[in-house]
Length: 617
Image (cartoon, rainbow, N blue to C red; front, side):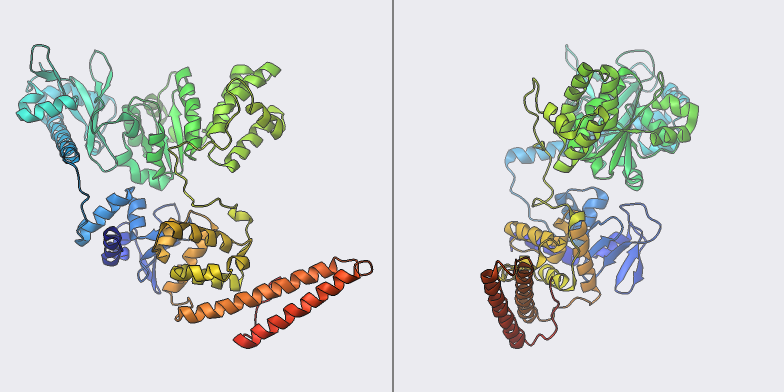
């Protein structure tokens, strides 16, 4: 094994999956397993199972499964390196360090200092808000906006005073000389023309903007008095990128996970007002349009999203522009527009959290909303339909699968009174040239290692097929032998064939593939559920295979007999389809062939002493 593989194996060996999961899920023992309520979807009856011996988990409700690393990544929304580091620190495993260049080391150290400085500034401004008489107007402002002490504390709200208020002179007076240079890069202070610095944020309530790990990347400020701009964010820096940060995601991620969906609002105080009213699965971009990075962030916690936008023209346009993003990320998106003249903050003050929830319940699916907006704009005259079709092109081109594309085309064709072929033909013509089919944005990862069949259409496993799949999953080191003996032929058309193809693909990339790793690499679907059940039975001592090589020989006999029986049945079907008067020669040839197959089958049965073999039809 490579050094990295050794470390991963050591961490998995030392980590106690029951202990790790037990910190976030109430588990109770049930035989050799532990069960509890799944943390990844809402349920009242436990369907979440943890097997200590095999060190893996599986939910029979939503299909989530994997090992201890998979769980930490999924639950805490961490990348693989982040989860590895977290568990390594906990269990005393030293991770090998990648050799860094001098420039990389310097950048890493600078980022560390920037995060530390933002924390220090948030503490300075936070203390001023809470205790200084000069922040009285700021505290009054928060009271008028309905911001309570708990929410203020949860979000770390603070106040950057003007330089002429009591008890304040200049942020730089609280910082070391070398920190001022970093503060300027972070947009906390600005350089004067004649030398020196002045505070960039003045007379503003500040919202610390945290990344998913809780580090303060920058600030968003709202002025409490007169002056422009009303809203001001930190400038782009080494640690602050508006397009990949969302206010509230760090604080509300567990609420989002529990709800299974996220609500996007446009303003910082919109978010605070909704959270205060009990609508807690909410986030806000930082004065920028939604980006693909934003959607990827929330996909780690939610399966769908609702955009709660103002009902003006800008709100409508923002919703329409987001449709290709949602389709491209395969995230279910909806939109709910507020009555004209209202924003989420004012609406929740009038109607409370229940009023907001009622609005969200009536949200329209984004593609449908975009279509209705196009029809409203252009009408359904001959010319209007042409313009509507032109407007639908970005939606169809954003589809990431043929199934998604077909559903969109079928739905809109019906709406326009066209057949699907006509609509597709229209979408493939026009000034923009032919529409791309199944466009997959370069940044969207392919999550399956093979072209999958629609799993709902495949056949379930019979008892013998299940035994083959079980052996393949539990003994991947013998997979080449199974391939050589022609195992795929016995699985054709079943979910076992899909599992076989996944194993084929993954073993090209992984020299060593443990059963639990194989499970973790499978996409959600019937195949993952089958493999999880096999591993659970193994954990209960129900799986066969104490002597893998002996079982392999037995399976080879099963396979040989099964294929011979199938060949015999195929010949019989051919015989039944013949004209026994006019095709006598062919009939005799087939009868002789069937006799030869039956003799060969009898010899195999005697050699391997297999007296009871399932007949494959």
